[in-house]
Image 1 (cartoon, helix red, strand yellow):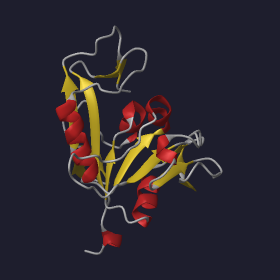
Image 2 (cartoon, rainbow, N blue to C red):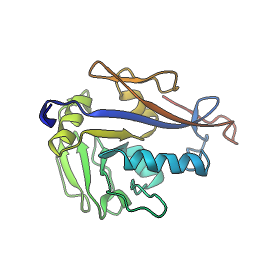
Image 3 (cartoon, one colour):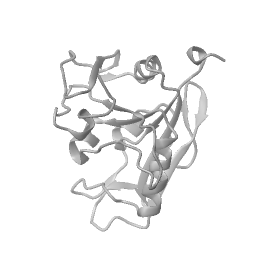
Image 4 (cartoon, rainbow, N blue to C red):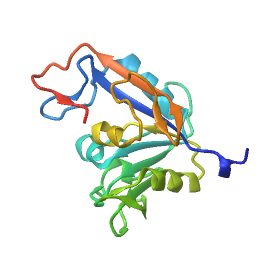
Amino acid sequence: MPVSNQRVRVTLKLATSLDGRIATASGESQWITGEAARLEGHRLRAAHDAILVGIETVLADDPELTARLPGRPVDQPLRVVLDSRLRTPATARVATGGDTLILTAAEPEPVGDAVVERVETEGDRPSVAACLAAMKRRGVTSVLIEGGGQVAASVPGADPAGRGGATLCGRARPVATFRRPAIPAPCGRALR
């Protein structure tokens, strides 16, 4: 089947504590899991054409969104940011170097080295279908969604608690979850 007729394969990756928290009460979410889970996360990144996060992840964590595997060169995936109001700082690591696409509901303006594209919206946020179409136009056939509670909750049919597969366009998709016993802070942030 030609790529133009194929759907984009979507994988949702989440790191949670056993009680379903994705961050501490203060919002800290980096290193919620251990080294083995981080390595598996990089393997997942390397196996996909794109990595997608929301603007809140960019603002909170300033991620590189690159695939890093020890002793092995990796073709880097397209980095995709969902940013309804175009708040990505030009100095953000995801906006400098590498191949980045920012999908927004706002009027496009330059943001570092990234390509900024305005897409159709559902309410005031970029629609899932429009985002998938924009990635597909760039040759993306698989995307790893890493982006926190709001983005995970926006995936139609997603089961963020990790009990089953995410459904997009009527097909089941994998959900990769990484868990730790508990987040060492009272009242951690729950998945939205």
